[in-house]
Length: 490
Image (cartoon, rainbow, N blue to C red; front, side):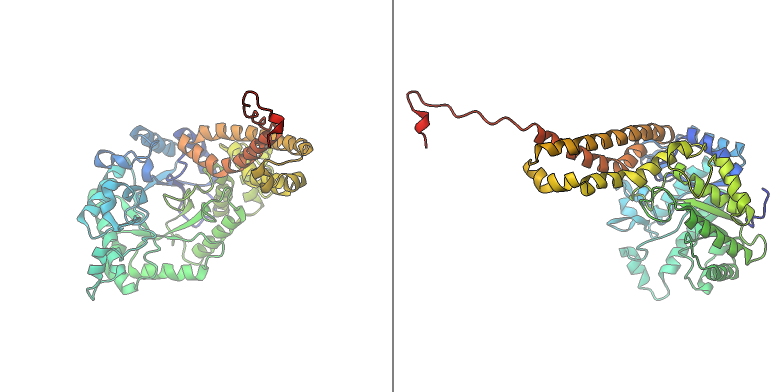
């Protein structure tokens, strides 16, 4: 790696708990990651890992096979990208604890997010997960064991009893589990160093942290995705961790998945600013004070939330952030390099029309997703809520009662049909593009969340118009009795 980056390692995070890419797409995108300045990957497998034995039920429907894992590692090696696998072992355990077979290991019964650290079976469970992941990653130097956002820790029944003892605290409980997990990693593979997210460590007293033994076992990853992160506060936190005995620290920024749970296209300026701040943090300390930086690209906020920005939609943001780190800022040279590698004319004014979206793998997905996110709902709203003929002559009142001035059908129906045809064509094109990069369940989910609601509103309008335009024939008159003068009926 050339350039002025203060980070020895620059890793792209692949969050596979939503819209995991097909291996064929990864084979196309890995060379771009390398060309942009990355030299590693943090792969958060979650339910995409091919667990075996009693853990087999953790597999998602389209989980990678062992041979596909080997192929991913081979592709990464070809592109000089070091792989660090990530296994959640404490918080964010929904993909495990949602299953009835493991529900008894929840810290709090109704919530599948946090593992009960008091159960011996809990450590056996995460130990088995770690062992299987390490077996398929024989060359790994680090293993990320998660441990972030351990919600409701201390609120389980066993924890409440344990916390009644005066010397105990939730901090001690957290550190105890971290130490047990890290010790398992070191026992199984002494050459592998565990990484942990740092949020559960930040507020712990220095003496408690230093005395826990955890600093000798793990390397914390300081994460902050804000555009206005507190640089001075982050430097002070780094100093605290060094005083506690942690030999190496890592940083974690974000290139997508951090500005809203249903964000469709990342705000590039926000993410660039986040990386500018991290450069300031790194620059305020001696050279190599941070082992590396992980550019996170969250695909869901948690296992049950909606999809964030799809990976292809995040590529321009990732490219800009990687080049910023490599150049020490996002100057004209960095911007030109991004535009050249992505095949776009202007990063700041990216044309959402397909022809101007770029030539990088998945650029057509970005163009189509941008079209949908910017214009689909607004165009349907404009027809249903802003068109005078619809609001004036075919309001919800009229639609429920099948009432309309016949001439108004001619004003409304062609516009609705044209809009539906326009979007249906684009959506078919998007579906084909998504199917090349993602598995069927991810394609179905993205379309159901982002496309179908608006199209269904259009289709419902046309259905109501159809029923009004061709009213049902009146019912036949009732039969008359023989010899009765029906004209005299009241």
